[in-house]
Image (tube, rainbow, N blue to C red):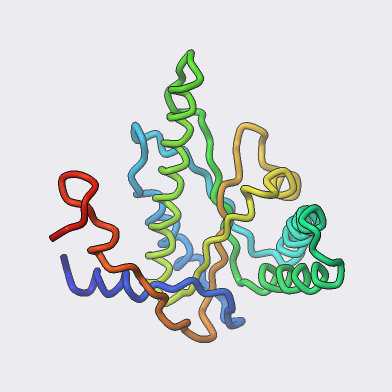
Length: 207
């Protein structure tokens, strides 16, 4: 493996704060092109990507997601004052990001089965395919000098996102990625050693 490629993997960070510097459409399209070339089950490419730059749309989206999150936190017994602080920070995070990309899943071109077991597996394959595309996007953004962060919020508030972005019912929001030029670079997170996570032949540690 090229050392430069390994360094790209190691240097990518989850970045949540960005400068006001504009990201050009040319750079964004290169990042989306990388996502387009991700592997997918059956080569079905079961993804769509919605890019959001318009401040008013970002705010509407952030507030809709926050409202859903607020209700969930209330069910968990989180005090109102604490919820207000969390929600305020969440809305600021998404509205200040120069670009938001919502990665969506569609089962349109995936295989169909008459039984629930195989159909559930097919859906999981589509989820994995979308995840591969998102990972390509994150690495491409890093290679372009951008920071990015993958949020799983759409799994918790998909209906709110669908309503704001006018996503058709057969398309499912799966992930939200913020993107922009980073203000600072976070420290590298810890990683488990290979000997702890890799097993040889059967479920046993490498020697």
